[in-house]
Length: 238
Image 1 (cartoon, helix red, strand yellow):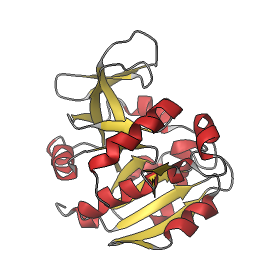
Image 2 (cartoon, helix red, strand yellow):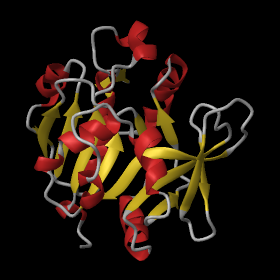
Image 3 (tube, helix red, strand yellow):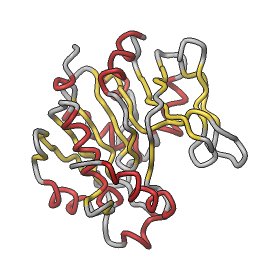
């Protein structure tokens, strides 16, 4: 399958945004405004430009606000909602959306980060490695906020270094993944579980690869990074 339009997309949009609440009080994190637009709109615009067609939004905190803001369509994207009734974490909410997924491979994106990734090149990489799970990796000068991804010589992921001060530069998880649907089906159901902390380490050695991207990356997880997003998106036209 070479046509991105046939691949289902899942956006993990259930975050509470604890550190952002003083700035976005009363809103879910994905609706935090950046240059007059909800942050989620930048992700949807990026997907629309890449010719994806179907997006499942895994919502949680104040999920009704997300559905009210975007409804069932954004440009050429068909939007479907998968609200969680209890906090399920990033992996749990992805598993909760499994009945809505039709494609064999699914593009999964974090709803609070943005990377200017080339989805076609990422997909070609995924196919060339015969990968089961692929992560977009982005270089940053300070990995202490994110943790560092360790790669083997064949771009296989061999480990994750926990967040720690003074860890220097390196590649970090940019929050964009191609995941084989059979791997999603193996995630435990109905419990709070994290992709990054609980699931990814167990996939090492099972066809798990990292796609090194040199494109710009930003997240809005802290007041400081949220403030930087205003300038980051200055060149983007929605």
